[in-house]
Amino acid sequence: MAPIIEGRSNEREGIVISETAYVKRNYSLTGPENQRAQDRGIASAEWYATPIPRKRMKELMQRRNLPAIRDTLLWFALMIGSGILAYYAWGTWWAIPAFLLYGILYSSPADSRWHECGHGTAFKTSWMNEVVYQMASFMSLRPATPWRWSHARHHTDTIIVGRDPEIAQPRPPIWRIILMDFLRLYAGPRDIKRMFLHSFGIIDKEEKDYIPPSEFRKTFWESRFYLLIFAGVVFACIYTVSILPAMFVILPSFYGAFLLLVFGMTQHLGLKEDVLDHRLNTRTVYMNPIFRYLYWNMNYHVEHHMFPMVPYHALPALHEEMKRDCPPARRSLWEAYKEVISALLKQGKDPSYTIVKPLPATAQPYNYGPTITGDNRRVQ
Amino acid sequence: MSELEGWVEACGVDDIDEEDVIRFNYGDRSFAIYRTEDSEYYATDGFCTHERVHLAEGLVMGHIIECPKHNGRFDYTTGKAMKKPVCIDIKTYPVKTKAGKVFIQMD
Figure 1 (cartoon, one colour):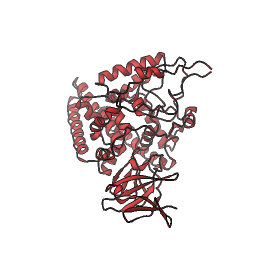
Figure 2 (cartoon, chains in turn orange, cyan):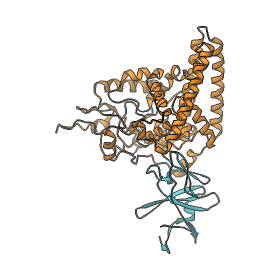
Figure 3 (cartoon, chains in turn orange, yellow):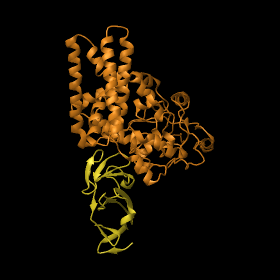
């Protein structure tokens, strides 16, 4: 057996765990890592949670309609306003910034509204969550039912290799996919392909790992409905002999997607795999009020993962309760990006590289789970 | 803790706030005991039927308990699954109060 560098003392002092030898891992849910995670007891496991008094947690969990109704009406108003600008700018150079604005306002909030309403926490009233969820799912090109189950698994097994279908990047990272997804050119076609398969009654093997059979029928009909809308938009383009209809529906999910990727890349990249503590695999980043509006406070991502029943509007307050127990939040998007890009570059050369931030003296120790480092070292 | 005629004392009536839930472990079993706004008491299995997450960390809203991990919901008065990802109903248990104590009847 080759000597194993534990890296434990490095973690205590700062930043990096690096092991000398690394076995390239299979991130598929249908590969051997799935069973391996179950065998190691890190699938559907119990995760660390910051102790917060029950009375305070109940206050933080309370649902309200007003913030989400206000934010949703504002979103619609911004989309309509920018859409009118874009419509009248069509045929001029002004159409480029106008559609860029429209695309951002279409795509970025659609992603965060999809997310929050999928959890059922955005609004107090259930049907409001469901209506916005369905609409935002289409706008994000994420069929509502499969993605509901995908995201539930993401919360059960966050960044557990072989279990989590929403791991953004393997180690080493695939830069081609990152660059393509600034225009959603990887994830978009993948989801559209799945829609076609669903419409023919086919669920791929990966999806079968997290979608229960009782949800298949709903999945099929949803995709057929989405494709019907696609067909309507294509017909409108042919009828008007213009791409303009698609510039308002469907295409914004691509050309307006870059900001949601910018936000999304801060969530988990560069951090640890196969641990049972969201403080180790998730990142909280301070953002300006505009970004926080677009992202619905998902920059408080450690907080969201540890306590997903807390609605978006209470996440800043939850952050105040938790920060004594968490590594310091990254002070800006820029600071987070320096960390993420640096980590991805290093993982390109050394896939075992991960960032572990030191905890404040008031924090409980990290919970690494059954193994210290994710057990991705070569054992000979 | 006393056991009388199949009923097990779970907690005092004031150990649970109104519209809240607590955890009650008995042997190797775990339960969630609920108190409504009208101070009626109910009991279900402790762990969600979707994943092994204890409902006592969740949010009580009227007769609904929301799972703290995936936001699935049950009507805890009937055990009926109300919101995905919860698909399977949860088992409920008869509850009675006597002399300031909450008792549940196990099978």
